[in-house]
Image (cartoon, rainbow, N blue to C red; front, side, top):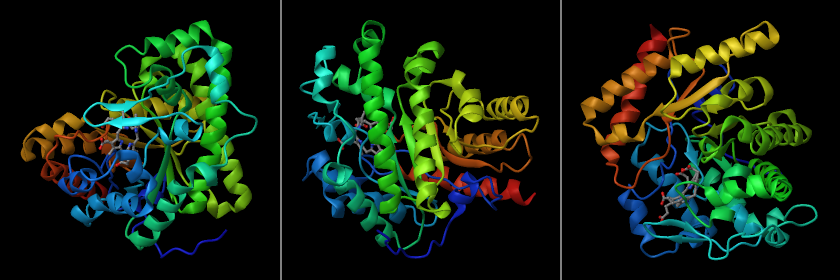
Amino acid sequence: MTVQFPALKNDLILRAARGEKTERTPVWVMRQAGRYLSEFREVRKNHDFFSMCRTPEIACEITIQPVRRFRGLLDAAIIFSDILVIPQALGMTVEMVPGKGPHFPDPLVTPADIARVIRPGTVDIRQELGYVLDALTLTRQTLAGEVPLLGFVGAPWTMLAYMIEGGGSKTFSKAKAWLYRYPEACHQLLQQLTDVCVDFLVAQVRAGAQMVQVFDSWAGELGPDDYRTFAFPYLKAIADRVKEQLAQISPDAVVPMTVFAKGAHYILEELVTETRYDVISLDWTMDPAVSRTRVLSATSAVSGQPRTVTLQGNLDPSTLYGSPETIRERTRVMIERFAAWDGQGQCHIANMGHGMYPDHDPEHLRAYLAAVREFSSAFKSA
Ligand SMILES: Cc1c2[nH]c(c1CCC(=O)O)Cc1[nH]c(c(CCC(=O)O)c1C)Cc1[nH]c(c(CCC(=O)O)c1C)Cc1[nH]c(c(C)c1CCC(=O)O)C2
């Protein structure tokens, strides 16, 4: 299958991800499409969340809403979908309860339950998740090359946590109890989820995704040893296998990959030295300058040469509750810290340290996007 797409007019984020120099820092924001936008709420009031995901025309429209509203200020679009479409593809029921979040009426309770979701091979991606692929293709056409289109999946640990907890949780004690009581069943499930992630990401790229991100939103619930046992090996396998499979299609098909292990500050060195992710997304609790130093020294220790991986992030989303002047000042400091190592802030993709909140003022996001442009252009031309 070869689909022809319009030529790309803004490839800033792809260049930054590959470590190439850019004239300003590209910026996009997790959850840039969502409830803080009145135009999203307008569509949402007439539709159930997952029906919106399953209707390519609606998913396309919502993906493009922020690009349209902040025209010229965003450097990427991320496809409107959810990390929980994979548990659904494996046969689980997931509902999105307005104001509460995801709910699994029938979560995994005992290891015998994994028989419901484990199968030989993976799932038929076209059949179970074809609607995401169609949404990607339609959106990439509709964007007409204005900005690159990002695809994504949830990381195996984060998806396992939802499938066992049945929704969000304060302690993740059900999911973590499984790691201690039923480690074998967990590994089987994590392997199954990894296999689906790999096939799904490759399919997303074939359908039009120009870069992909793996969201390990609950990484920080695990300590270093558990993370190294139950999360990291699967994250690593996803990057290895996706890159291998894309390279087999053609060298040009290999897109940049981002990993966001939220809260797992201890894993930074291993992510850079042992995985093939091009971009590492930092949450707001990590200092950009310190993170860069850690990356440089970890890579030189391994190869004798420091490697410049691209870092993404990391303004605290709560900063957007401040005044536009505060946002501008905090953004200046953020840009400066990402530039501490080279004086320019190359190898940086600006984002928040997590997603937008529903009660954010879109005009405050605009202030952030404008400040990234202002200060990063100044640093890079200095
Ligand atoms: C953990 C997680 C989920 N989904 C996702 C993650 C990883 C990122 C993160 O850590 O935030 C990923 C996701 N979810 C959504 C996107 C779309 C693209 C974008 O970033 O704009 C993406 C990339 C839409 C969404 N996903 C969801 C909404 C709001 C749903 C609604 O309208 O009711 C949107 C726009 C719902 C969702 N989906 C999920 C939760 C916990 C919730 C409820 C919390 C909330 O309501 O914000 C699971």
